Amino acid sequence: MSYSTLLFDIDDTLLDFHATENRALELLFEKHGIELTDTVKDNYVKFNQSLWKKLELGEISRQELMTNRFTTFFKKEFNLNIDGLSLNREYLEFLSTGTDTIPGAKDLLSTLKKAGHKLYVVTNGIDFVQERRLRNTGFNSFFDDIFISQKIGYQKPDARFFKNVFNELSEFNPDDTLIIGDSLTSDIQGGHNANIDSIWYNPKLSPIDKKITPTYQVNKLQDILQIVG
Image 1 (tube, rainbow, N blue to C red):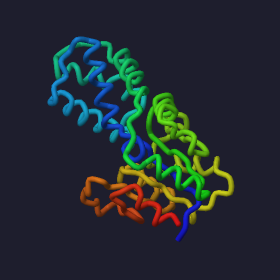
Image 2: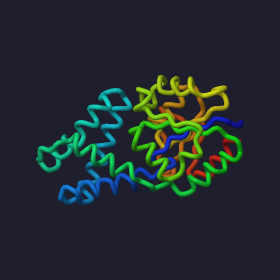
Image 3: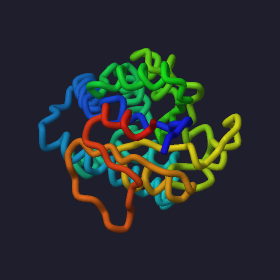
């Protein structure tokens, strides 16, 4: 089986979100004179991930996430009343400066592009943050188009997100289209909802959720080349 159209998630698939997030948090806390311990950082990451999961499930809106995450976290963690929306804007600015990439990602994209594959970004991130990070790394030059949930109005894994994407693709054929990402609930479930094949990038060898089964699974990015044809 060969695939001509490849839809790439970016966070922790091509770009190292974990590293970029760490640095953005350090800069934010330093700016406000608050100590960022490993425990506080871990608590924030878990809390933030839970909010994004709720956003995926449609339980909260993007605006609620952006407005409340720092307000709620600082109240719970430090019993501080802060302007969460202002802190969120500062955090996103720091986040948008990220240049951290997953090892092998640039070589993979270059090889796929030279081989004639059509490459697209499909991400649930914030539009200006994701666009800047792609420009910062030079990865934007590999993609034919970039699709961000904030602009589309729906999140992965919602089938409506993918319907909007497919409407923008020239000569779209679901049989030769593949989504590649690290999230079972967002990317792989999204592929299932959109009736396209999927590759689960699983570098940590995490156990698979029996409810969500990818078409393929790889532990190294370069192994994708053997699948796409």
